[in-house]
Length: 168
Image (cartoon, rainbow, N blue to C red; front, side):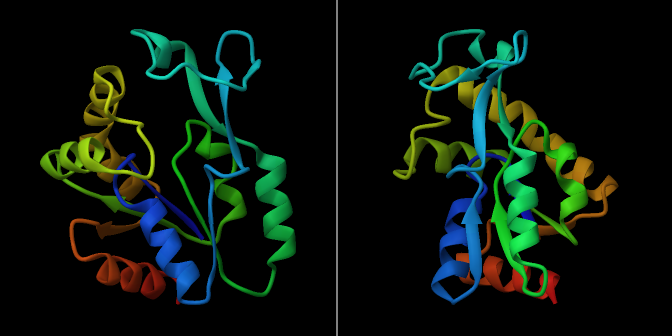
């Protein structure tokens, strides 16, 4: 199952909670994704932090299909959760039986990005602006794709329960 949503929606937190409950739950940011220069296709190993103005227009966060396919082949008879948000998601959606999209409002998004301690993405004005631009588009995009929509402003245990319900 693919669990996605805007940066700050709670994907990594849900992933950790599912893992703690005994499920196979992996964060796509850890070994499945990488920064790519959209113009040249080159991998960016050490992106600048904070990103300079215009950087996100040229570079994107991409998932590696081969790694996701390998995971799917290793998990044919059990539910496995891969949690992330990537630019080239369409390249891997066929590898998942279901997609769940975590959604939050702009105020929650802004608060979470500015106060989270797991990583700094979203604190820089360029990153925050990109997240706020994408946020209202997430729900309608994933509804069109047939994803299960989960209100991630609820307590995290309830969000994880909703994800598990979608998986059953």
